[in-house]
Length: 75
Image (cartoon, rainbow, N blue to C red; front, side, top):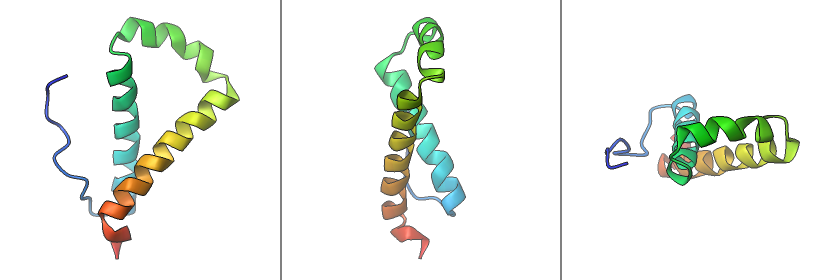
């Protein structure tokens, strides 16, 4: 993936920050496993696994924390 899509962590609102955190998290998965067929095949394995879902939420939360800090917590 050579496309430049993330030019700034600056966003106007916490809502936009959370949406960016989700995008970062999803893109991280795509970078880790670029084969869409494999991703779709594995989805049932983690879609109903509480530990996997919690881990995914933790990644989103960490990305949101980073974005919030970059935006001075929207002060």
